Length: 204
Image 1 (tube, rainbow, N blue to C red):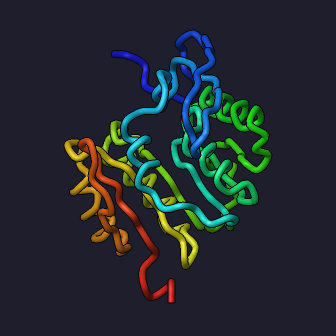
Image 2 (image 1 turned 180 degrees about the vertical axis):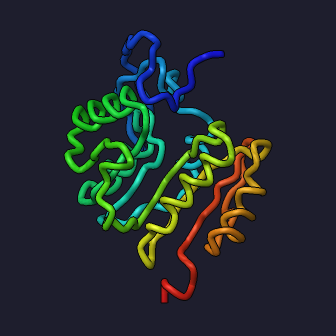
């Protein structure tokens, strides 16, 4: 079985290459490598999320959950340079790539870290994620159960999930299990974009 991108320490060769991609309306050059998610460039799901997600506020605390080499975190940093962006992943190679890519773009407020390195008191104004569906429902649910309740009262989480990998059932789970409003705001190229907000009783 091939190595998964959600391995903490990929065993595959760390062969890095430069790639030009379009993020936040501009062409940027990033480093990518095997053993991380979507080493060939911007994957379809992430592209759909970036096409349909609302513009982030100019400042605040943002999270890219499952950052890979950093397309979402870098976009957040480019769009909102005054914001603090936590780029979270389990994959050490992904975190190193994201760190280097942020530094190359002068994004000093993008912090590529493991989940444990994000202070427990941090509350999140925007969470963007192309979540690792293939880790299985139990791990995925634990991940979302940990992070979605950390939304600030006016916070919003935007998730992109492939329709045939359970986007509709995930939407029902978030609403039923976590008691958080979860709305489908876009559907494109086989993907759904879901928007999650805190329960009304804590956001008023």
